Length: 235
Ligand SMILES: *Cc1c(COP(=O)(O)O)cnc(C)c1O
Image (cartoon, rainbow, N blue to C red; front, side, top):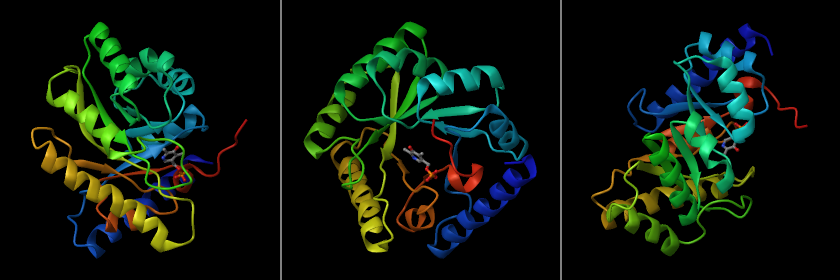
């Protein structure tokens, strides 16, 4: 995709985000756009930067590490959004400001260990499983609450938990997709009541096919790839 096509896409998606914000009585500019650049070359990221996009999402640490080190632009902020193996945490903590795909307690232990070594603070989202299609995320509230309890007790001083993340089912059935978003929003309410000392304010939900719905249901961050950068070439 050319630089001007990418610029056009950003313009269009920003307009759609604004429309969804207004439609649902949300404040304009209250939803952050995370541009998912996975499987797209570093030139796509450069085009996005020219369109004043500074937040990016990547699934694979190895790919992101190469791409963002090559880019070497301090304005770019990176979130890891894909399932993360423990042996990739060190590199993830090095390059990312945030890990959105935290799905288990042992991952938090490893993130804390690596962040402490690098003397770096990192933010995280808890990924929660709200729909059958996706395999990732905490699968039940109890295991999520154990992790939150550990934060409350101060176990992870280098990690700031900021929100919840989910993937809705890939379905044309709007009701089904909404259900998934509503589930996450309700879970956030529960978490805020139970753990009022923790700053869990963000809801990362909504992708190319469903971000307008997600915004209507309370999303504060949408993760959009295909609608900005085009179809991905999977190797
Ligand atoms: C790939 C991916 C996205 C972006 O998906 P699109 O449909 O291309 O917008 C968002 N979130 C996660 C977790 C992803 O893996």
